Length: 337
Image (cartoon, rainbow, N blue to C red; front, side):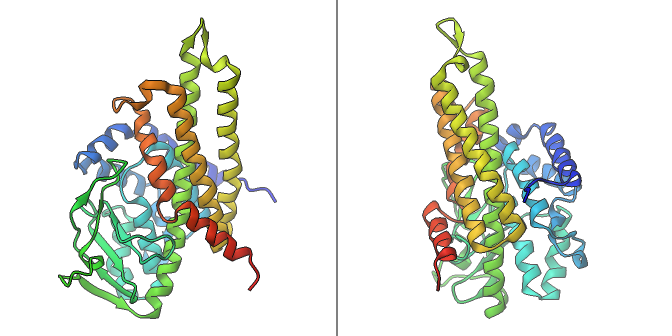
């Protein structure tokens, strides 16, 4: 079996890459980290015009249908560009509302998400690697929270916390706080919410894996470009055998992760998605460590755009399923009984 995109899928990925390449994304990321969301919202609208967000919603609600392979291709490009914002969470909310089967809720929220008019963020109680911390709730129009009791609520964002990546702004919404305060509007409850949350968490894990792959590819490309320019002992350091070996190992890790991502996008089985997230996350982190070592001291500077991707690698590796959680899921999928 050949896990290769079709011509149409490749054209879609190239369109996104061209759009993001001309969008000055590093400036958008820095503005986002400073709490200025305007440039990110503008870029979100441009991405929506390509139909990217429609790939996570049914046609009945102005979507293109639930298409994980195409959406995964798109999220690789978002990771490669370093796109900020709750892009994964917005897509997961679309899937959650689609799977829930509540027409009133779907009509209320999905058209705006598909059209790129608003962000949404999501917290889950451990399902699919869920966390009580919402990403970029201060920039999202809607903060959805699923409780362990199977309640879906709209929650108010909490205090923004510090993160390894300044452009990933985490907060604990009121609905997840358990402090007896205002838990937010109750949207739905019961087993359907729990089932939909599991599916949404799985999609979030898949799309985070795709982001990881894109981040790793961006780090490798920038590092290759750098070692061709930096010289020592009168020669580019990229000509040194030790440097070549490190870059080759990084490339192999990314290339071995890629087919796992496409397989997971085709099947969306829990074990396949966990395997893809594990390998893509580890490959991105390996690429970050390689980039940091080969750039030397300049790699630590915030002024260098490289830092925007370096800071994403580890948080994305751990988001929606840490390596240990993904390994456990893979073992459950292959263990009889």
